[in-house]
Length: 195
Image 1 (spheres, helix red, strand yellow):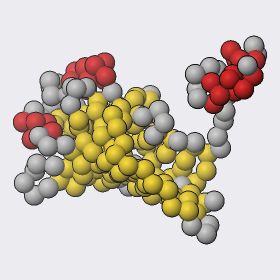
Image 2 (tube, rainbow, N blue to C red):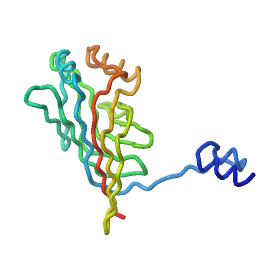
Image 3 (tube, rainbow, N blue to C red):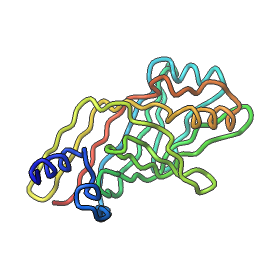
């Protein structure tokens, strides 16, 4: 019976509190320096839809936004600075900006969490918002070097994180172009840390 309980706990079916009758201890991970990049390109039709509603993407240094010559896609890139467990913290960011009204929603210092499957941002008022949900991750790889470990996530599909977030973006930016039901972009996360 004990072996079955251990297997269920390992599989995540039972919590430690249910098996032992005592509260489970939270696992904490140290925050460690990391380098790398999180980048995503807007999905087909997204940038033209936003542009038709006067919405544009603007980089927040040291992050950047590069728009294609035909204004059909934009690529957002932010440098990584730290890692806590599966959460990867970036510097800079981007903002969604209404060129007519001047309204904007800032995504500063985004944290990309591959286990929680979220991209969390610091808004202009200092609060955190789970802006994107990670719908899927196409591939994962790990490269172990002499002194570093690099983890590579490819084809990360991003969507607006739920109806409430889409409604907030639509209200703040005076538009109706945000929806949680379409892929906003596809990106890559490459993070390197010391061994």
